[in-house]
Length: 189
Image (cartoon, rainbow, N blue to C red):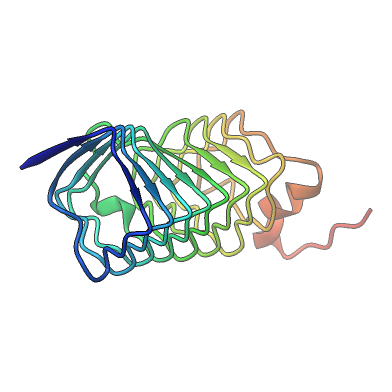
C-alpha cells in the first residue's frame, strides 16, 4: 500500500483514472471529480477536500480521520460503510442530499451551511453535533442520539422527541414546529 503525505491534488478526474489505493495524510484535494469512483480501503487522515464532487463514490472500509469537506457535492454517499475507527469529519458548504449516516458514531460533528435533504441519520450518535444553517428537509431521525446537539440555526427538520434521544439539544423557537410535526397541529404566531 502506498503512503502519500502532504501533497496537493488539483483538477483531477478520479472517475476516469482511479485514485491510487493507499494512505493519504495531510493531503489536499482541490476541484477534483470523485463521482462514482471507488474509494474503498483507502485511508484519508487529516485531509481536506475543497470544491470536489464525491457523489455516489463507494466508501467500503474507507477511513476518514479528521477529514474536512468544503463546498463539496456529496450526493448519495453511504458513510455507514466507512471504517468506524477514528471516523471524524466536518462539512462546510456541502450538499449531502440522499446520503446515509446509518448507525454512525459521529459525535461533535460540524455540519455548516450544508444541504442535508433526505439524509438518513437512523441509529446514529450525533450527540453534541452542530447543525449550523443546514437544510434538513425530509432527513430521517429515528432512534438517533441528538443529546446536546445544536439545531438553533437549521431548518426544515422533523424530529420525533419520542423516537430519539434529545435531552439538552438546542432548537430555535421557530424550529419547535419541527418537533411537533407528527401531531398535525397548527402553530400560529
